[in-house]
Image 1 (cartoon, rainbow, N blue to C red):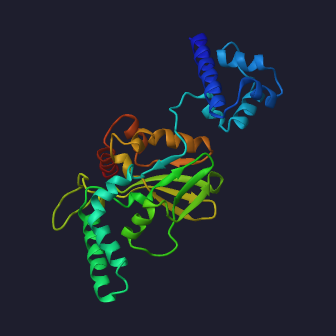
Image 2: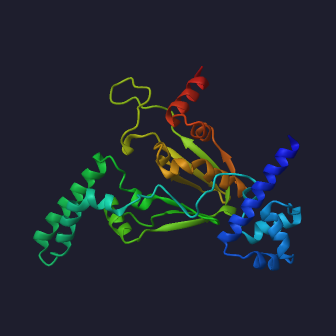
Length: 292
């Protein structure tokens, strides 16, 4: 059994060294020169004929821009940068918002005639607001998504108020106000799920199955910074089983942990996703257990 485990570890490390060396566009010779060792040593590691020493593992992790966990563990790959929650295609936005945008643009091009210009602009904004309110898709994802990178997290951070439809139009041209936080600035992350339930309008509903983005429970990632600031990021896309966000949810938090960040998951979200349970059902079961 011990021999099998050793062979398994050797295979994982050898595969990871080769994969990440190629990802960094190093030849075996170039990597060996940077580590001040022979090319044959790199070749042996990648074939699984030998294991790197602790000192060499540390050097490899630095040169390949990896944590030691990423280098020696067989965790599912997390493609970086990862845009969490971003609308996949701008065509979706154009499909839903073409007519409101047409009215707004026609009004903007008619500003010389103020009396006739404001009517199409106002009607366009109103129609756009209605689409936002009753649509099956959260078009705000054009600008509210966050990006996980190797060094930190970039997220939407508006400086002034602006209607959502205007922000969405700007996002069509890749214009949005963002802020970047380094992992070293984060003390802990909390996965927050609002399982307090929804009583509805004069009903006794304990909780509601979520179909529309505007009436779901809050499902957020709270970043607690070392300066005392708390930043809230939306995690809703993990509700959808076929989404990339659901697929990479657990690897994403594995990656955060590998960067030395404490992860707090009081609602068992990570466990639910790993076991393919319903996030909502499991969170409310947890609430029932706590109340009993």
